[in-house]
Image (cartoon, rainbow, N blue to C red; front, top):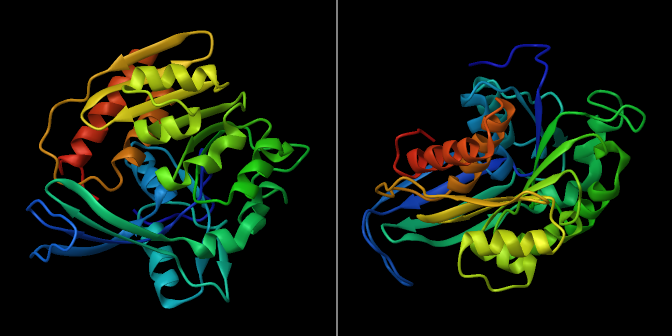
Length: 302
């Protein structure tokens, strides 16, 4: 679907929009493995994966990110436009290259990955200008809808967002880019309007507690001041917790795993859509788990 002029977004996706370069092999791998497989290049990044899933479920996401004015950037913008994502507010840099992510996956899961999101980090708060200059909001009339925010932003910028009047009316949905960047979300941990989407490892980093299950990790995050959390743990039980309402859990459907990169982002987007449609807690969690399972099994296209 090609982007139409004047499309009005109903959700903002702020963070990493880049090219995913993924090598997948059908066999188990270890350090030093050299095996045949397939290498693909697709639009990716946490914010991009979330936006694509939101669009598949009927929402209209606008992207706030940094993309270079290079050939790879032009191709990426064109790909986003074809999918019906709103790119009018993307910061295009003349001197920063388009970011990239490279991962290797085997039958035993993710082997290694490198995220080159330096341009997004260097652009800093330039990507947020549409929220201040009245295109999407202002300090006096801030954006009042949902925002999906990813942890590829710098810790300093995430801290600014946590205190900014530009985000005072928003429903913040937040995900770390990786366990290595989970601590960047600490400024948002106690934000009253933030829902955190993390896996078990990331939850333990944020809570400073070594929980063994997703429900325990959700409780630990609530004890640390989180308003709402969702914790996943691969094929094991996932949990959703809310301040004052306790923790619920759900079991992912058993599936054959054919890919893992982007599964957490799909889970988050599906949960956002389910809640926007008015699903109760248990049904929203179950819907997100079904969508993630369909994704990792290959039933949903990239």
